[in-house]
Length: 242
Ligand code: C5P
Image (tube, rainbow, N blue to C red):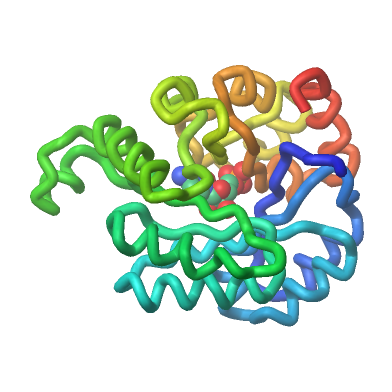
């Protein structure tokens, strides 16, 4: 079975544009990420429709609650048949272990990954929470905790991938957003009139070379005039790595 490295972020407020985009894509080349906005608006029915079209889905709901509640939420996600689901590592070891245990009996156990430190958080934000470590130290600490709690991987920036790969081993799954394609044509389209809000970006190939397992890519594909062509071009760039 193919294991496409590209996960396309369906950052839409409703089902219609998400399904319209899915209809222009190819499940053998990508998976799809459904986050809080789209899932809250559409519910599991949309996941069903995407999976009927042959896509595997990363349900990006970043669960963070007491162990029992998080575990049951993960179990519910597993019963929806999603390929990947995530939690906040800040929920701690007991929460993460409970989530792993809850999904053990699932017919198709989704990959369970953790968010470490939100990339929106800077040193001052951590200090204000009473956390004295630097964001980089916290990312590493939480990634190792996620691995030790039995999780399959973490979401991280491509800049962190090499460090986390060396500390967490080859089987740990690193899912990296903040990807911008090498082709000026695609990057240029995104930037024209809409300043990009991703500040620390990496090309798809460089991210995989740095140790990323999967690339989360949104606007370079969703806003392209021909999304399938953009997907093909990026797939081509990473061919040797996939
Ligand atoms: O359009 P773009 O490629 O920037 O989309 C990236 C996707 O990855 C969005 O869904 C965004 O919420 C998500 N993401 C991110 N940075 C993180 C975690 C998630 O951009 N640190």
